[in-house]
Image 1 (cartoon, one colour):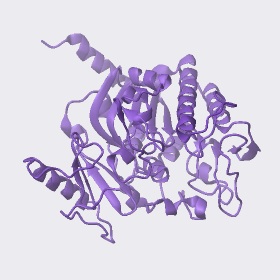
Image 2: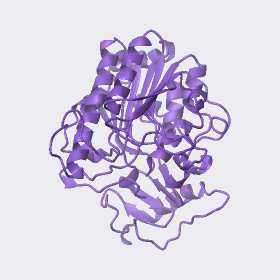
Image 3: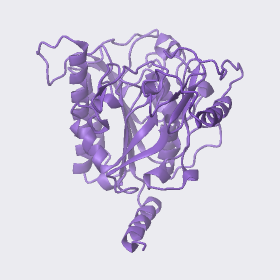
Image 4: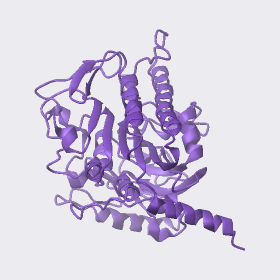
Length: 432
């Protein structure tokens, strides 16, 4: 018998999305943080703020970024896979005097939100255009306000120190601050308090926990020496900063009408553990553990939360999802690769409303996976349920594997570019 109260509850949520005021949107991107350092994913490390967010929202078990933070950032802002926008490897980074992410070449979703009346802000790490040479690039990409660590390079070098005594650029003004992550977090909290009466978008690409790892205000003065200890301290402080921002939203009475996404830009820079087993360092690796990141969404107007899902998501999906939540029509061009995960958040069981594969890329290596298998453009094929470290090729005795491989090969073949530089050879190569 159908539970009429459950039906009515779903209807209320669906109606809220269509009729309520435009929701606030917060996108939190932790730097170099994989699942093996987040408690709710099975890590022994304590992350109470993120774990609480998971309990209140939807935790995605299988979400993909790219193996490198720069590529992940551009992917989520544009909704395009790396080969489409031409930044496919770390050597393309703008702090090496390249053009980087240019408003003349891409349409980033913050600009679309801004045009729709959202107050927009970025707080954290930029490094996708050289702000010394392009001082208006953040504004032209759609950010009303900013408080960013800009990195190094270009004809007007910035400070190389990102933590203690770092230099931040806040709404065009450069200044040295005691501890950059605190200053950025305080700036975003103040932004929420100022903009609470109108819809806002916060993009929070955090500095933590990227290297070089150092102490935090919690353990300053301690005798931490190992990279593991310093990194663990960075994760703990990152979690506290996430908690501060979320508490500000909730205490301002904005919880019910605010979408919060928490994720990481690539696999962990220091190996942690998952479900009692040692994990592998993922950053930069052309493997599932290099791109398999935490992905948690709290959206009370869409879902009651307290749910874990195996639905597939990759970083191109953030673009269409945020625009759909904001009721903003996406531009017709250029071509985009993402698919809204709103049906997934609502708990849809219709497979045609959700993904059946996800994709990632670093340089010439491209990867695609479904719920069980992964195939890359070097011909490596693995069953992730049996071999999460990708140490062994799929057994030739596995009767379903050939059909699964053929399907993944067909998907990879869709993404050949003009150079056609990869192939799905049946001869396996060594997994890096």
